Image (cartoon, rainbow, N blue to C red):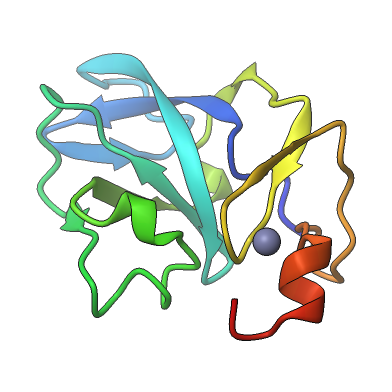
Length: 128
Ligand SMILES: [Zn+2]
């Protein structure tokens, strides 16, 4: 089960254009990243303008579903991290975003086996 959830903001260390492990002693700077989705045992985080990361990806029409993202993130630059790259939590979102439509539900709790939320509409209307 994932430690963090989409919407959480976390501290990561950046070194030479990459997010490095949380215990890296010689990092360049520390920055806050927003977790956008859960993906492949880790997380996709939003990369703010001004933080050039070498292995960042642009969300496009052919990959947003693969990354468990909503269409609204198309055009955003994201980066893949795992728990080892998270120093600590900056702010936990009080509620959860649906993994399918990315709608935010205040005070919602996880209802899927992987610790994510799938909203009522997405559970009942598969092709929403
Ligand atoms: Zn939904």
